[in-house]
Amino acid sequence: ELEFAGKVALVTGGSRGIGAATVRALAAKGAAVAFSYAASAGAAEALVAELRGKGAEVTAYRADSADPAAVAELVRAVHAAFGRLDILVNNAGVFLGGPVDQMDEAESLRQWTINVVAVQAAVKAAVPLLPEGGAIVTTGSVLGRRVPLAGVSAYAASKAAVANLSRGWARDLAPRGIRVNVVQPGPIDTDMNPADGDLASVVRPLTAMQRYGKPEEVAAAILFLASPAASYITGVALDVDGGMEA
Ligand code: NDP
Image 1 (cartoon, rainbow, N blue to C red):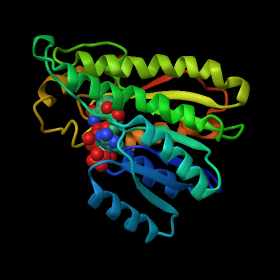
Image 2: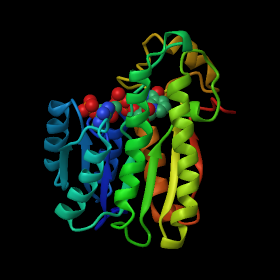
Image 3: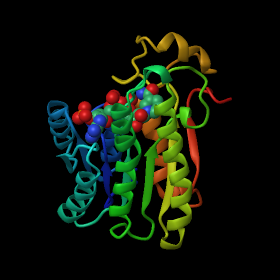
């Protein structure tokens, strides 16, 4: 039941959406959880209070993924504060839409830094700290596999990048006993992609199930990949997409 008892997990971007659901799920299974946020201090505080009220060990850290050095520092700070680090969930991400003729290079670079470079910085910082049996899970996107709609090219490219980085890291880190995997959500009902938002009429019909997913449905896959039940799984990108890729 308390599958993650004694384990320490860090979730980046844990204040809202898929990250918050992952923090809740890890805490419910007995993990001590640290999570980062950038802007949503109120949401972060509320989540900490909610979970501490249930007896969980949870701490929020402000660390802006637009600054990869701050993310590396976050990883080391969490390891120092909790005394160990077993699971790294790279979830913080931003979505910057728009067709190529309207793309702003500075904004694209910021998205790339948050979605890709900060993930690399977190993994690099975590490698010397993770034990044998450690696990890294990154939130990619089904758009990292294929691009079935217009106006998402730069975001899709950033998610393709984390998928292929993770395949390479799986190779790099298997000798250390560290597994590296990606979850690739389809449309998930969060602030980033509300089920009643502008994108919904385009993406909902692309799913076999004809519905949005819930953050908890992605968190369940993240927990599986982070758990010993997935001990022979590394370098995969697991679609959690209601059959969008079917
Ligand atoms: P939300 O916008 O609902 O939540 C994003 C989370 O990331 C928040 O906790 C936010 O914290 C944090 N975050 C954003 N920017 C930064 C930053 N610069 N530094 C630190 N934390 C940051 O998004 P989702 O929950 O939907 O998305 C989570 C992940 O899932 C992302 O990587 C996203 O790309 C991916 N994804 C989402 C899909 C969807 O349909 N919703 C589909 C496929 C992938 P704060 O508010 O404090 O900045």
